[in-house]
Image 1 (cartoon, rainbow, N blue to C red):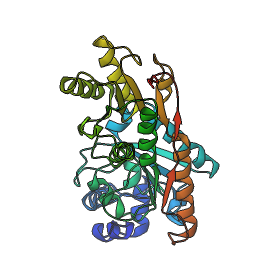
Image 2 (cartoon, one colour):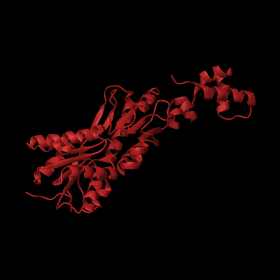
Image 3 (cartoon, one colour):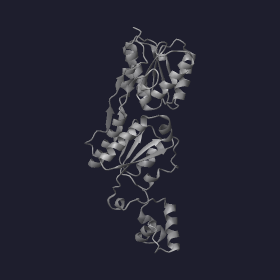
Image 4 (cartoon, helix red, strand yellow):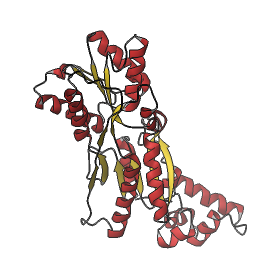
Length: 340
């Protein structure tokens, strides 16, 4: 259990009212009493509700939005759009969104974001993969949590997920339908459930087409960045020089692949066709514009906050959906050549 103002008062041998006066920096409190109360607060690791409204009603009007620093910096506009959707919907419900980043190496001993320590929130939206230690540290606050694009390997958490399996099938089938047989898959963060499902969709589409391209898979567990896409493309072409079609796990990866191909004198799509996933804005601006699987990013943020509101309304009862799967769609541009 988290310490309360009553625990602080007992430890400092003062009244609850005195602790409250110290917290509000009231001048009537003697320096010695103030020192004793502040010492107890520090020793107990006590954080008060920030607002008077929170003290009375336990409602703050705030929703936390958590993402790792690495995802925030390296996944380009994907999670920015998700955040915008969450912010739009929160505003519709008279809530503010408090954005905080944590390290992907978060440990149990690391401090939580301040608004969590101060209990200055009514629920949390967690976007992307985060460390288990962070989730477990958060559970003691007994507040609603909704995950976006990730499901922890423990517990039964409400979540808003991409139909990655269907997207992987659509992407690979489009390459097959355009006449390709040797189709490679390239992707980082392979331990992330979303990337694993995209790879499963790739394999399923090949299996349905009696295609044995399964050996053309190049993955690692580094972030899905352009730099990693470049590195994985080099690894693929060091292994096989005759690849003519690649399914890249997300847009930054695809852009890294395209840079590698251009640097090595290959034309897209004349020499190699590229399929991608996510459809960030840059996908339509590069040359050639990327054919991709579109993910409704803003809608995911909206759905997550709507789910959080329902959980609060029904107080966690089982009359709401625990998982929402958002559909994906194929967006055809100019990075795939039909060779039929």
